Structures are given as structure tokens and as C-alpha cells.
Image 1 (cartoon, rainbow, N blue to C red):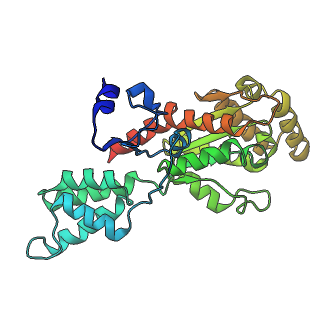
Image 2 (tube, rainbow, N blue to C red; image 1 turned 180 degrees about the vertical axis):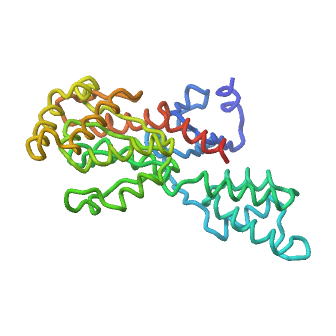
Image 3 (spheres, helix red, strand yellow; image 1 turned 90 degrees about the vertical axis):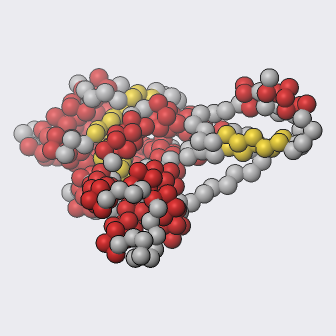
Length: 319
């Protein structure tokens, strides 16, 4: 129906698909894919992964709004005016803070601004307080073994999460000094709403990873932080029962620290606990180096089919 309508039209046609969240084949929705120069198609999406899978002539990445742009858009939807004749000095100050807490995201600015239009200042202050407390400095903390996945799975995952609008902490290796976890990493874990733990073959070989894991599980209990393990080319039962590489690495830690070491016992307990959590397993390319497509497609699954969208939804609900 759509295809025949477009083909029979003689004027220039512009078709816009807004907020695309999955790979889209134009033929499936009736858009002719021949060399019809009269028909142009625009896609908008928040996910770079989808953009990569769509065959397009040109890709344009849009940055978040500047503070000035955010304020202009916020005034439009909230009804706030810059002059004190229409808006009190106190309301103007609160309104500016609310606008900037929206972090340059147009949809958030529009929704929050519209919801506060003509509301008393007390409601503005309540919204401001909710924005400040529900938006952690980091939404997501990534715990991973650098030599296993930094330049493959976790690297793609970080890129996809960041470009999807998630404030994601991924240590670049510069914070790792000595045998103890750094205060900066501890703070990043505490300030995150969700921790994603990429459990790979050599994860337990690193005392840093094990200390991160212990801290993450502590925050799960004390701060109700959400914890989601990804079993990347490892079997959860091998972690649970300390077999294969996990068994070898923990035996080495025992040799280094002593069989009755309290620190090693904490690591063992943490590994057993995380292996029993609900997560996602990836076995792609087992024994081989995963291809770019395999790794990026797996990250696509994490964002679209996994826990991340549900967490994002819960943040919006809290606000």
C-alpha cells in the first residue's frame, strides 16, 4: 500500500522514522529501495549500533544541548520567562537548576518542563531534589578483566552504552596502582546505580577485579545497587564450584596469601554469590577471538534485550 502510493506520487517525498530502536529494512514497511530520487528517508535513533546496521548515505551524530540551548528549550515548554515581572527571582533560580539537571537531553527537558508549567515553586523544588538524587554521578559501572575484553566485548559495550545516553564508568587502567583498589574506583562503584560485571576467563586472576566484585556486592546490600553479571565465554557453574581457570587462580591466591586468608575467603564468597545471580551468558567464538560483528551484536543484545532498558525505565519512574 505504502509502496504503491509512493511510486504513484510525482512530488518530492520525505519519510521520517523517529526513535528507531531496532534494525529496520525499508522493504518491510513498504518503502521502495530502487533508485527513486524523489523519495528521501531520515532515521533518528539514540543507539549508534542501530545506525551502524542501517545502510545510509550519510550519518550525522548530534551532541547533547549546551547549557544555553537547554535553557531556551526548557523555557519554551515550562512557560518560564527571564524577566522577574513574569517569574519570581527564586523561581528563576530553581528553574535554571532543573533545566541543567536534565543534562542536555531534549526529551527530558521537554517532559520535565511541560510537567512543571504553571505549578507552584514547591513542586519545582521537589522535582529538583528528585533529579539530583535519582541521577547518580555514574549510572553504570563496568567491572572487567582488561586483557580479556577491553579491546573487544567490554570496549564495544562501553561505546554502545555511552552513545545510548548512559553515564558509564570504565577504568582505562590509569587508576590501577599497587595491590589495593583505589579510592577513585571505590567512589565510582558507590556512585553507580547499576554494576555490570563481565566475568571472563581471567577475571579471577586479578586481585583488582576481585576487590571490585566484593565492593559491588557490598553496595548491592547497603545501597540496593543493581548487579548484573555477564558470563563471557565462561560457565557460571565453573565459577560457582571454582573449576578450570577460576579454580587455578584462587589456588594461586591462596598460595600467595595463605589458605586461611580472610581476603581470599571474601573473594571466594563473592564469586559464588555472583555466579548465582541472574545474568546473561555469551559463548560466541568459544576458543577463538570474537569478530567485530559478534561482539557488537552481543552488546546490542545487552542494551535492547537485557536489564539496561529496565533500569533506565526505573530511573525515569523515580524522577
